[in-house]
Length: 325
Ligand SMILES: [Mn+2]
Image (cartoon, rainbow, N blue to C red; front, side):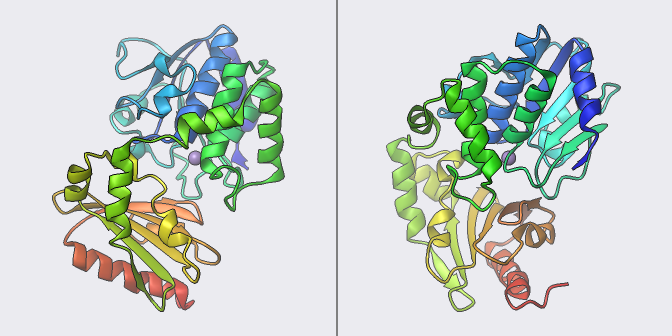
């Protein structure tokens, strides 16, 4: 582990007030980790502010304690440390990046392969399934008892990042922690109904259009889906409604790399990449200034969609035929 685990524990134990946050467009791991650590620190008598740049998606806002998350706080307030959770680089903190660049120690707790160790203290373990798993270790080491609310948020964090304990990063440790959280009162069925298996009809309308765009390249080894702003408008859907759509091309037999392209503005695109077996898509994404994990990564870029797709297909081809490096 590229860490000073003990220094993080000492700082969190000795400090009295903390600002916790996660990356922009947060997911269940980011929010679950923040709520779990926030809940535990509060229980230990600390003063904690939980911050996200924007309001949470409807499903994440159902997580227990989510109402505590704020979109503004007193900038004059003094914190003993700022904790960034599940965030691979400072820029992904959005507006808070400037603030946390100040005098306060910045603690970076994360598991992304491409984490650039932007914190003053970095608790980064790329072998961890999720940030939630790292937060569990922190809470445990600090000796703070896990209550049912903390347990649910840790469970949700691990469940999200392991694709409900199916993805490549699922380990016996993730399953053991999940089992322990059940002993603290978590009901997996209820958590799934809240944050995974629950969506509006708009998501289905968007999916219907998205499935129609899937194309295959490189002898069927690449499956690519493209979502335009127009589709989001027609379906009355949000960007978050396309979460996990990239799994549809990935599930097709023969596909090694799945790509989902989303138009986020005028000639602005977000690419999500997934791989099934060999290709390290974090490396592929890093060629475009992005990053992530070996089997789940992404990047953002600007340009004409035809040119961007072509460029990606060429570079992805290097990985598929082993000519990259
Ligand atoms: Mn994560």
